Image (cartoon, rainbow, N blue to C red):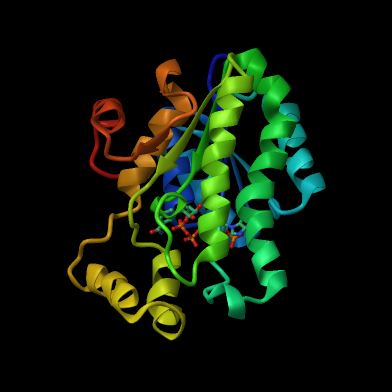
Length: 263
Ligand SMILES: NC(=O)c1ccc[n+]([C@@H]2O[C@H](COP(=O)([O-])OP(=O)(O)OC[C@H]3O[C@@H](n4cnc5c(N)ncnc54)[C@H](OP(=O)(O)O)[C@@H]3O)[C@@H](O)[C@H]2O)c1
């Protein structure tokens, strides 16, 4: 019982995070699912429990430092250990050029995408050191590639990726990776298709619409499988690295371990 891994997944109410929780459950993991929307978390928790895992529902806004600390404390109180933290909760807004961005919305982006992971990592460090655990920070191609009208998101994901590298330098007992999950068919992409044409370079906005039309968006279960594998088994040599979800060093063992096509 005590060896069953315990993993916190933020942004687990839908999209990529929900599928990460579902994959972890298929391996019997104990999964603390966190996000703001209780009803959606309850549905994902049911999936976790019926797939062979054990869920713990933790409604929380990751931009709130105290809420992040409570989230880690409650997980430790409930399950007695912590083996992995998947910082997946993320937002895109503001979709606006720097000169037109609302400063409060910009700051909110940094609070959710960067400060939240920092608060959670900081609170989880002692338990993760004890367990020689793992941190998977969900990054983005936008961490490397500048995309007009996405300044806060690009800056937050670039910083999150570098934070991952610093964490790896500081914490030899912990394995930390930043994962690029591809372009995924979730609510975030729907937002880009809806609001992108108003704010973004027309060619770039059209590119994202075309991906959807051509059926070329990744289904969330696919990068989620890589993220779930990393949360359980990320090897030491990847610590501090920014990795692609379909990198064969990750996707191959993930496919082999989880076997079935979708959760
Ligand atoms: N979709 C893509 O193409 C793509 C590409 C690269 C990277 N990513 C990254 O993948 C991750 C998952 O995104 P997704 O595509 O699955 O988007 P999504 O469907 O919009 O899901 C975002 C998740 O984050 C949660 N969340 C948002 N704000 C939160 C807050 N303040 N506190 C706690 N939870 C919060 C949401 O739940 P609540 O609303 O219930 O709080 C939801 O569960 C994000 O980090 C995103 O940046 C996505």
